[in-house]
Image (cartoon, rainbow, N blue to C red; front, side, top):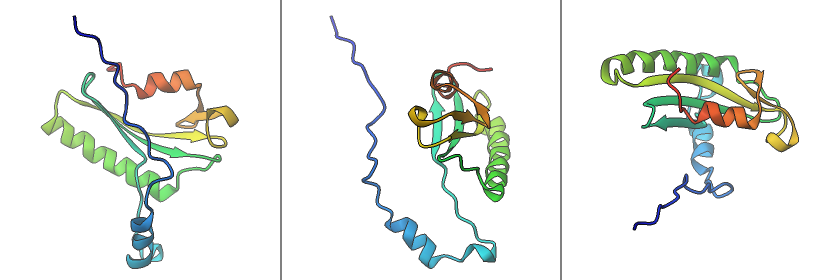
Length: 133
């Protein structure tokens, strides 16, 4: 009889991320005053089981997402939804969302999902993409 294998997400390499490219971008590409803006996206959640994709931006220390970044992600989300209707019609884009920590994590302050306070358990449920609601 085969033994069930417990799998988990690959381990994080926090503290080992090389920021040279980020520094290179800031040094070599146009300044933001020219209208050239650069953003990263913290997480893309992809569930083959429920056929859903969700984008997550994480903010700590009660920071807000900037207006230009919000507009960027909203516009990109519209494009993704349109493309999914044509190329992945059985999939659902579960949206772009902001997870904000009052300080740095669950254990040192409140947590918010799209500016609504949320518990860690509730966040696990939302981010697991188990339902097709």
